Image (cartoon, rainbow, N blue to C red; front, side, top):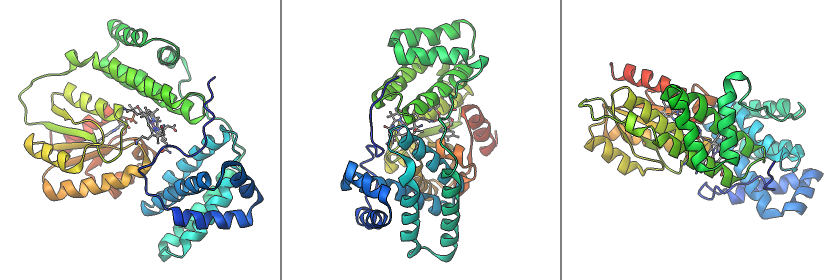
Length: 351
Ligand code: B12
């Protein structure tokens, strides 16, 4: 397979930099742990500080949202990232311990109790030997999905677009193509990236092709129905993952709604203006990167103030990881996929 030899820290330059805190935590780790000293010698202080910063932000996120599932997911994910880049997970425990010890001073009593649970969980998870997570496309039902994956990795754009159209010609429903072929293949692309088996460029390319493939359905899907069922959908802040929310908007469109899909990373003021101008009765906001949950919380509180009668649905990757999170965001509802979104949306607006 492919190898990009990446290090753990990714290009997330817009995230808050807690450089001073991370340096102090790293100092402590280096004093107490030989592996950590070796790591600093190998990668340098700047890289290791960035790495601690990323762990620190995720520990804080789990504490702020009181979410054990988010923490478990992050541990598993960072372990996969580190193991498959030959960086050794030996440093993960000392880093997390030092982070939790550092945070102790500033935590309230209940937060401190919660942080101790995170500590226990990290020990429990990391003592189990690492195993490579299996493909998400196992079983006979996944034959077509595997073919599509193969084309995304080794074929041309035209092969991919033709393949998706051939499924439609074989009478596979558009909704099924989206949920049973494109969605799982995109998730598998993510798994391959996480395991360092494909490059970021391949991940980008696959997504661009999948979006083009979906666009072929628009002459069939889009309608001009006169209706007061108006949906405004998009992602906010720095969230650029957009296939999921596009699918959600498409499923609403297929259900007879008027949908305004605004795109990704829409500024809050612009989003609110659209809700007002288009007379939206339902808003759908998607989030994929867990650290972007803060931004979703902020926009929801702004929408509540500016458009008190509008209903707000949320969804996306972290909300699938922790099914209680939507309540902590002060949304009106959430759904696991595009089909369930339509059901939840109709219920919320009483249709
Ligand atoms: C494609 C992709 C990208 C593309 C996005 C391009 C684009 N224009 O969309 C690119 C390459 C740019 C990218 C960038 C990054 N990505 Co990325 N990406 C993915 C990938 C492979 C697929 C996402 C996707 O298309 N899913 C398919 C859709 C259909 O599924 P879905 O989003 O879950 O949507 C369904 C439901 O959730 C629900 N739903 C979704 N939204 C909503 C909204 C409402 C209201 C409702 C009700 C329901 C709902 O319905 C949808 C349809 O059924 C995922 C893998 C994964 N497991 O998701 C990684 C993944 C999300 N990315 C990841 C990462 C780390 C990043 C980067 C930080 C680094 C990188 N890879 O370069 C950057 C960050 C960018 C940013 N600022 O947002 C990680 C996140 C892990 C983590 N710990 O945070 C993942 C999980 C990959 C991995 N396995 O490691 N990424």
